[in-house]
Amino acid sequence: HHHARLPLWWQVTTVPFPLQTDEAVRVLLQRLQALQGERAEAYRLLEEGHQAYLHSAPHYDFPRYRQLVHEITVAFSGISREVLHIAGRLRDQLARPDLAQHLAQLQEREQEKLQLTAQLQLARQQAQDQPEVDAHQQEVRELKHKLIKTIEAISEILQDLKYDSEEAE
Image (cartoon, rainbow, N blue to C red; front, side):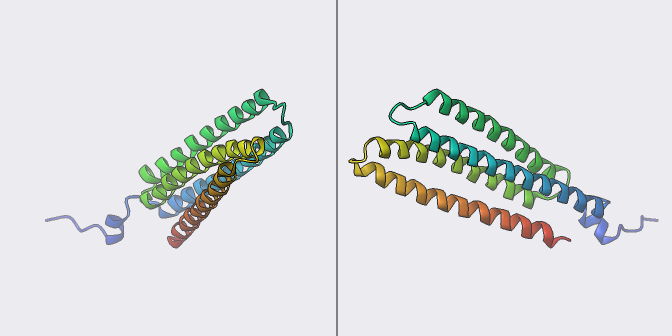
């Protein structure tokens, strides 16, 4: 005689403990929130450091600023590694490729934000050193605009992540 068929919910879900899964997802997303907070703090320090650097003109204290940039870069790569680790767990262990996808997009945009921020800081220094060159002012404006767009995209991804993770509950 053939086996009784598994109930449908068992076929649909690969994880036998839905509650534990939801809990694990929640914990990981809380960790992500904390990491985004660390990123925000790092940006604040970077901005403060750059302001101080600009104020040190014309005898720029470059080594000090470079050291700060180095420390921030190290902090960011640590955060990125952990975000990718969370994405991996969501995808491979918790069967949430949708959430993992959001995290991958978040990482791309955060990478973009960091590059734009570095470019903007350089452009600001050039604009300060050569105020008569309009191209520098123009570049500062363009980079600020791109940065705003990138930050909006990041907010949107975080909104989608929140929505898609709560939908299941």
